[in-house]
Structure formats: C-alpha cells, structure tokens
Length: 395
Image (cartoon, rainbow, N blue to C red):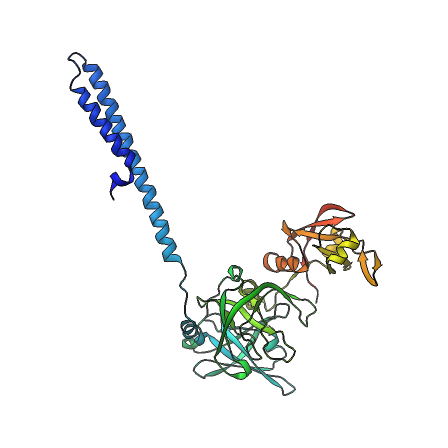
C-alpha cells in the first residue's frame, strides 16, 4: 500500500520534521538541554504519527475484509434449469386412496433423511393408503405422522432407500418481495416433475379454509399452480423452499393466474411439532368482527378507515377474560346496518393494525399458547391498552 498517497497529511508532517532537524544544526553550543528536549518531542511526534498510520491501516483492512465477506456470503442466483436439476430429486408424487374407493394425486418434498415428507393436509386427509413415488419411479407406502388443517400442512413418512432421500433446503419467506421471481415444481394433473415459474404477486393474504378459520400470511403467486401441484414446493431463485403450493383461485378449478402457497416461515414453525407430537396447537383470542371501511369510519366518527371493530366476544375466551368489549348495538345508514359500540383494535404489540389480517399474521408468526399480546384499542373515543393471555384455539 502507498502510504504517502493515502495519508497525505503525514508526508507534510515529515517535511516539517526535516525542517526542525535543519534548525537544530544552527542552534548555538550550550543549548544541550534545549536540543535534548526538542529531540524528545520529535521522537514523540514520530511515534504518534506511526501509531496513526498503523491504526488507519487496520481500519482500511477491516473495511476490505467486510467487503470481501459480503461478496463471499452473497447467495448465488441460479437459472431455472439449475433450480430444477437441484430440486427435482427432492420432489415426490403423492397418490392417495380412501375407503370409498376414490383416489387423488398431489405433490410433496423430502424434509429430512429420516424419510419425513411435507405435503398439504388436504392431500392426505381421509386417506387410508398413501403411495410416494420418487424421481427414479420407485414407490413406497407412507404413513401419516401429523396434520394441521389450520395451515394445511401435513407430514408423512416413508422407509425408503437413503439414496433416494434428497432433503430440500428451507429458505426464509419473510425476505420475499413482491415482484421477486419464483418457481414451482409438482405434479399438475398427474404430470410428474412439472415446473412453472412466475413472480411473488403479494404477501400476507388470508386464505379461507374448511376448518372455519382463515389461513393467515399466505403467499400469492402467478406461477401456474393446478390440481396435483398441492403440497409441492415454491422455490426462490437460490433453489430454497419459500412456500408450499396449496390452492388456486379459479371459477373453473384450473389455473387463472392466482395461486397461493403456505410460507416457509410457517412450515419451519409447525412441522417440527407435527413430527414430534402429531398436531400443532394454535393460539387464539376469541373475537369476530369487521375491518373498518370508509363508510363504517364515518358512522363511527373515525378520522381514518383503519382498524378492526370487535363485534362478538366468544364466551370464556381470552378476549372475554381480558375485558374486551364487543358491539352493543347497530345503526342504519342509507339502508345499510352497521355495528357500533365495540372496541376497535388499532395496534398489536406495537404493530399498527389496519385490518384483521395484521392481527392474524402476527399471531401466526410470533405467538404461541400462553403468550401475552398487547392490544391498543379505541374505546369510547379514547385510546387504551389491554393485555390478552393467549389460549389454545378450540376445534
């Protein structure tokens, strides 16, 4: 490293030192003490300068090391061909049979070397026989280890040859951005090992389900997902699983540009419990209500159309125990009846609540049974806080 180029001020200091040395030669004899004192000062200055040089060199090298580490740590983006070649061995076909003689086909992916395979709960629900088929065509019977209908996640297990078990890596769905390219692999209409691609269309969707509770925090994608894709992986461009393909929005039952996937963040939270316990117990507040829209905001005298109005409090629920208040009346405006008088949730644990989805996503991502949840509410025109202790969601 050219120190004179980087530390220009030090070069000037060296010139000053040279001048001081020149002056020393013309100081009259008899000034020995002065000369010694000046020499000591010069030595101290030289030590300080060298120390500064060393410190600056360390700082520069530290910055260089940080830049090099960032370059080395940056994940490699793969081509679609590379993603398929990397992932296909870990994707399986799931065939099911039921007691009434019906059958179905779905997808799944290898979770670990113990033979655990992840799919959708609705793919294996009511199945009396499950057959898993790997890339090379070999098939095995599988058993159900656990299911969670509230997130549509199912875990099955096969006693397969270890050479066939190629676990796929879970990515972090919380890092996804709208517009980010993704790809899906599965068995649409039974066509094994099919790949489609698209983008992340939106995050944090609510997906209605037969369980009576909506599935929160769902990924929306325009990658083609059709019957048979259910349970297969949604992958980012590093070949990491960021979701489980689970549903489509369609009037015909076939792909129309809107597909949904359970995020990997949910998978990482729930699957280990399903493997160990066979079920996952969800936290619950015990309220129902409505998102505040502009008309409702006007009726309730609110400045902004944000928040969630509590209409009903479930008996013996965490909400009732915490003292939350539901709607106590209605008001009819322009032929429409509006609920009034209930608490309006505008924040949860310091996070702004614009609609019920914000509450449910936070519950799914960050909370478990027994946790406290701090709700910021509007009650009678004033803001207050209520702490709810979460309990197990009833069936």
